[in-house]
Structure formats: structure tokens, C-alpha cells
Image (cartoon, rainbow, N blue to C red; front, side):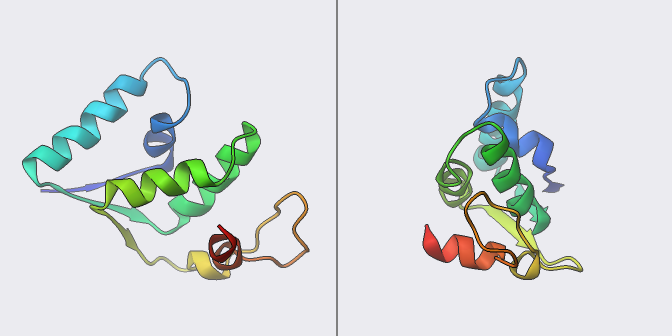
Length: 103
């Protein structure tokens, strides 16, 4: 079975929300049952933006993405490497790829 992960579910892994346990259980279940999880590449941008909004370093969602290992990213139009970011302190036109390289 393949599950498509939305950023709102992924972000629950690092935000203090009432249903955080359900998100953790979902990813644990997928890992235990060897279900494939995929996400649009836009999830990375959305996770960066959410982390920054809550005053968290971008490394928080990035370490979770790396730790999940089985979360595969599916390219979508406007691939994340070309999405312009509005990151505090970053020059205009900075892309997610450039931010990722800096981590």
C-alpha cells in the first residue's frame, strides 16, 4: 500500500499538537508494515515555512525527513529546488536547494 503524506500530518511530528500521537502512530505503522510513504516535494518547503513560523530551526523538520528514510518525494510542477523562499536573513531569490545546502 502507498500513502501520500500531507505537510499538515508531517508537521505534527515536531509541533506540540493534540493529535501528535496519531501522526507518530501512522508513521510507525507504515514503517512496521513496510507501507510506502510518498510526499510531494512541496512538503519540504511547507515544513521549512512552518518551522520558521513557530521559531524552530529548519534542521528540525530536515532531521525528521532524513530520519524517516522511507518518505519518498515525488516531483511536482514547481519542483522544490526552484521554489523561491522568503527566509529571514536570506537574500531575495534564495531557493530551497540553497537553504538545504547550507544546513
